[in-house]
Image 1 (cartoon, one colour):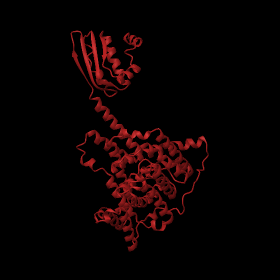
Image 2: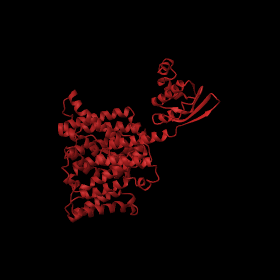
Image 3: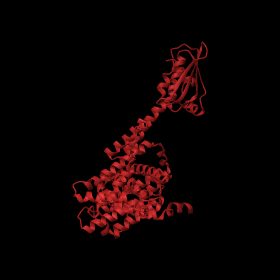
Length: 494
């Protein structure tokens, strides 16, 4: 227990503190922007980001990952807020958390093993594109000063790490934010700042029970929204956890992450915040700034609330150009450039799955739909590939006996090929079907086997099945009809 605490909280104190500060600064404009998307006051997003970050640091399954209010979740709330108001959103956030906790205890996080690497790569590339596109409004119809300071910020981010000693100690995104802010204030240049996004809260969040009727009607109103938010939130969180796993070469507990996300959303709902989930952009900032442990996520939440409540005058003067530079760095660092450079080396099916995932996510802004399409395509390609490895060889043992040897996997994708591999018109007194090297996976495969046996019997041949393994025998015994005398008699009479 003590070893785990020291590893997750105290093994990287300096790196976690500094990276947490960088993340907190980058969280502020995003939390405000996501609040505006959802149609609520900026403090709702800021309170949510504080609560979720602090709670998930303690309860989550992926140390070093940042969770807060997100755009993907905000988009799902728009209609609810517009039609029923903030209180119903808070209630929906609480219910979202309950559903996510249930998903954790049902071990649904383990389903991530069915998401292929091509889908994860497509998801990452799509988010990198969306992060970059989200910065474009800050770079449209602005003065040249904005472009200049964004370029200066990028120069600092990529150049500062080469400075001897301090370049490896202080995160370059933090230096970028401080330096660009100091230059803008020193020169008195009038460009868009964090304060222009909306008014920052002036008090800490307090416990609030959502003011909604506790009845079935309320449940029916918020349930569809809560289900959508729970699914999208878990999907984005688990995908982000997988990406952070790769960045840090460590493993995470996906089911614990589900439960942690649920607890954090319940707390956020009761403290005036909206539901949120993991943020790939902020998580990448955290990791690239040196954050590895739970302390970095905790510090990000604490610094966030301290800055917006007690240092609001200072924070509101940070130029958006500095934060845009940080987010452009995130989009560049997040994108998997190898997936483009090596696209000809990868199997065409893998590249198609990756590209399809990117296209669907970017054009619909629906992460769940993009991943669903990617997983569906990957499954179809896999089934088609495995189905082609099934084959049937035939040999004549004597003048009246023929043996068919089945090799490979028989299931819905290969059942037609299995059926068409037998010659039913050839005259044989006995047919042996050897399945030592085959496996029957589903009811479609069993139906194909029934069809083959029945056809041979109709042609007057005695059929003998040999070598069926125990697993295949179980499903054949349960769903097959060729070995059930009463059913066979009926079928053969037709």
